[in-house]
Image (cartoon, rainbow, N blue to C red):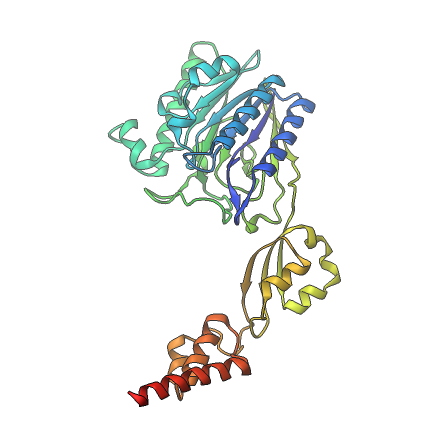
Length: 387
């Protein structure tokens, strides 16, 4: 049995104002190639299929095409909702989609309705949708704590009971659980939405002990928390904090004896990410930064003063610069100094004006700018005297 574990597609997301739909089409093409070349039996999507509860029409069409292509290639799809998805909208038509090999798990009622894969001892895939603690706890029972650990723990308890019932009935299964959550020990990225509202964010890792495999979603970096507990990570980078992460999916292999292998499957992004830091002139002249010229870039300038036309100049070499920050070195003039402190040092109105300009743009007023301030202040003062 070969299962492709993915999560956090975030279809429809933009990256610092740049639409990513074409990049998402590209990763889906690579995913489909993996399904075909690796003879994948099922594709798991562990939440955050969409980036927002109300995706655009073109985004919905992209998912529709992806599901059609995957099932046409011979694989089933098991999909759970994440904290970015609208569970009700994503789950629409689920009973009909089952007949075409697409299994949607977006509600509490389906937690103990596994998708059975394979012959012999089947793999039972239990899909747990994202459970918002304050909303899910009352539905799960009066004694369930309205925390992430409380609601997920109750969902896992019910799954364990279902596995035990099957075992007692002489129909054992290899249980695989999908969950969209933040498990203890996971490493976060800047592009994930905080889950801590409504309860303690992290859930104990031992919730997933005893399962053949736990296919987790939410954290965007691929990582192994235990031999049987993995985050696949997002298929594309969605923040510059993910610049050094390897993106793709996980090929999970299971036989009658249990889990046999978990193999990372890399998918190449159409454009790399680069995080650059240095003075403007240093970055423009550095011969080792050639690979950044075709990348999306986050640039932090460390000049003593903010260079004029900084974005225009940095884009002359790195046209894919999306984020530009300025962090002068420690000890530079005015660094970490409040505007009120600067104002207290001012000796006249001209100092106040020039100090404000310096404060908001991190660069002293040029001589011609001081002259212009002086001219305007002179006219204002003359007007006041004439009244």
